[in-house]
Length: 91
Image (cartoon, rainbow, N blue to C red):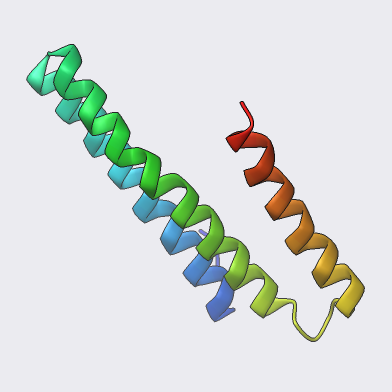
């Protein structure tokens, strides 16, 4: 078993587990309803969950690294995240 004592790491992992649970539940609901229209609506709701979890986990990671990464490094990470979202929105 893993022994993790860092609260930031526990929080990041917990958010990812919550996200995975939501995604798994959504998949089961899609199978349960067995309709393309309903599956599409469920998928649309998931479009909010993914980016929200991504931003939250990234923010927690930056908070955890606050004293270890330079200001330029933090700015680079934030720029990278912004570029990911820019690239996704341009598709």
